[in-house]
Length: 557
Image (cartoon, rainbow, N blue to C red):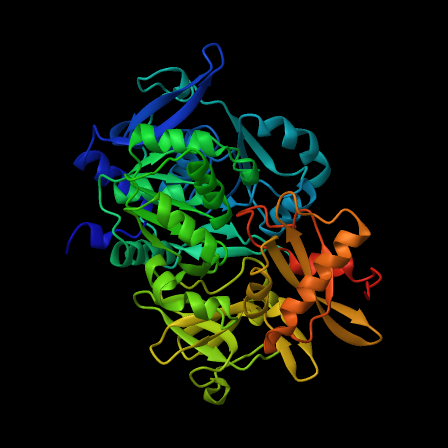
């Protein structure tokens, strides 16, 4: 048997890559030199990364008595510390708990209490923020604060001044818990997804089978959690100079400079972040020819953004994978296929084509059913072309939420030994087996016999030259649900006066009357900036908008 095929803990790939390519660069980390006003880059080879992970694993075990299956809540700013800490814990057989650092403290500690951690591990500036509040939320939790000295020297230094005792970590079983990753909570409270080692192994196989992520590539990930796959795949990771807690504040100039300096060949990021980068490139007449592969995920990517990216990244194979924290990836499609085949369909409200299922993944469409589904019933499956709830099965599909029995029952369907995950998304399969996404089930608006789906309704209003983004919401009026659209105008086009607002709404109503799918929509609101999730800064909080505008007086011009 090939050595790599027998690996159950993906963190063990660090040792393989350290032996195979010891002097190749694994990490490039930015360090701002304010005295000279420039960014310097600190390099870590695969050998150095492996040694420091092994050292940190020994520290966790020797000094802090972290053992296999201990749960460790991470309060670590994304970057070098997060990467080494996650790998060290996984090598030890402990279970890292990863929660979005951009959440409010109240939400963060609510998620933390659900996951019942044994330790809280923190580093850097976040230390004081949580140290002051932990006694009020989780006073019994054992706390570990580490300071990393390895930033201060190009050579490998001990992370803490203790003896480097080599321990032999246990070999985990495929079904052993590996990590707890929380959802973004874009349509409800965030839930902890229990990942087992076999789920990560399946994800790694899916990445290798479906994407050209060869060893030796250089990657810059604008979603930090995905940078963890690069050291496993033998790829160089360029850590972006950005605040991952506030991705909307990304400075495109710094990202472009890093891409050009290090000849970055691939990247992962939300469409809204890459649109910001692309707009800067267009303003400065910059192209990024070194990029050969680009992931756009987190939310559906609109056609104008794809066209803009194609013009500034001419050599890239751009993909828009579809998935969820509970199951990733599910389906995938290339940008060129969208632009040359499905653009006209998406612009006219058919939905968003997200491609065919990835290797070993199965997708079904079922009738929208409220409540739990204890076991599979074939009569629930819908025929080709009919919109229903998307469910998925496969080796990368997780089976349970951590300490959430009722939510697990709501989200899973059992068909013998096969577990189907209910994505909470609405869509349909076409005759060629491609999946079309129509919107989140919770965000669809049912009015009598008509159902309004976000991805089948909003594209019509994006045709207005002054509309940047928009969101479908439902209003409760006289015991009846009324569809409405919240408009985020483009910069310089927000209607400040009653007359300009009247004219804008009149144009939107005329636009709605042109199409059958939008003819019933007469109500519009304006918002300077639509609220979005903290992880991708891309998923619109339509339910929050519905609550915000639900009590507003309608303007009947």
